[in-house]
Image (cartoon, rainbow, N blue to C red; front, side):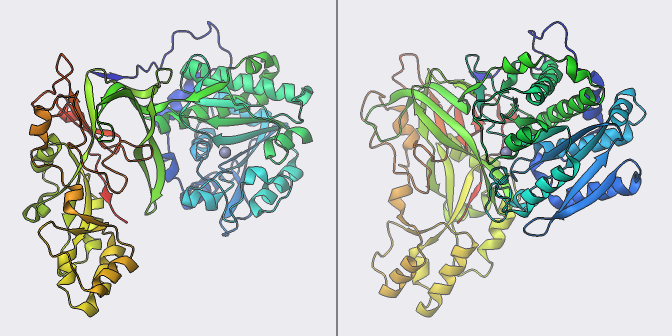
Length: 592
Ligand SMILES: [Zn+2]
């Protein structure tokens, strides 16, 4: 049933002869990589440590210079390596959330320093002088945002020079006037190539120097260099390289450098499948080193600029996950409807950590689209995961696999746990503890309205305020509770903007699975499902992809009575009837 995308690392359709390919580069990277596993975890402080270590160990070969400071006064460095006549300048991460090339540069330093005796490295260092400016936007990198601390896009600041980072880049260019420039970026990791629908791993752009995208000898040289990089990458990702499409942008650096005479190539890193980030760093490592080698040895002059021109452009985006031709029953429509369901993992920063949360990105007829992971849904019935309340006597068993699996088999993807306001331990500590644990299911803490009302009036605001600050997500009213509270209690809940629910809004019918078992999929579904809350429990664009998937019996009218086939939590498969051992613990602590 699972139809994982077939990924071929050794495509069969590579041209019979490839220049600019040194297999030892890939081998070196695989054995000697020093940049961290996740590219985004390389922050300014760690980069600085690498630079200072190299400068101390190899003072002759690794010349480190501080060019100045960012808006928040993080140092921006310039590293010079090599002593040849050809000059190259490269800069990375002018967009803070584009870290792939900075990681590759750290590994390139390591390679050029430790493999100095190899012919390949000697030819680079004897033929060229390379100037590196890694992490041009350290403030943006620190918080994983595109722009600098002033909120400026540095790649639209080449004319105005309103940011210290742009002034630093322009300053070093004016001082060095290098012949070649490499402008290193990351782009949307879901773009595909026109016609073939292949995922783009690397896109190359030779920026134009005028509106009409004319060629002059310098731009043709840059195209030759792009063609070198394409050929260097072909053995790894032949069908996954595209030409980046961009109009002349008079405010961006690449276009200006090109017009000022530096032969500039922009490298955009796209996406990959499993193990993506590491592999993409390796591709950068290879493309940059082969480019430097081709410049240093002047072999780039034999590269055909037409190969760059012939690169395909990108087309639409693919999805991270798609359930194709599924029957969807979400309570909004009386009958299940048939469509494709696209889910993407959206990157965000939560408490300083980068998380990827799966959300519904598109619903409808998407037969022309593809996904990194595709599931054939033609015999599946897809329902939104249920949100349920964990009984008080089970609150300490939230990590108990057998209990949680039991809930999942009944269709739950989120469990709310009541936090007792009168207890002395802060909710914050509980949540911190849970965040460190790999959860199987989503967990959120709620406060009961009755418990709040039982606290002395003058302490209620503090107690609820603390719980809210600690991460409680809602106030809950049980069906059997009093529904009239002191006006001040009501006001406190309003003042703190606490979402407020009645248990019947979130509690699914107790015999939900039994109902489904006897449920005729051609009849009304409205009574089966309850409303979603907090962006969960529904199948809607931008809601979180928590799903329970049942197998339809042969005539597609009855549901397999023995429980769900799959459960997806935050877009990841967290339960499968058949492959329990390979599943991820995909749950999150939901908090405010
Ligand atoms: Zn960028």
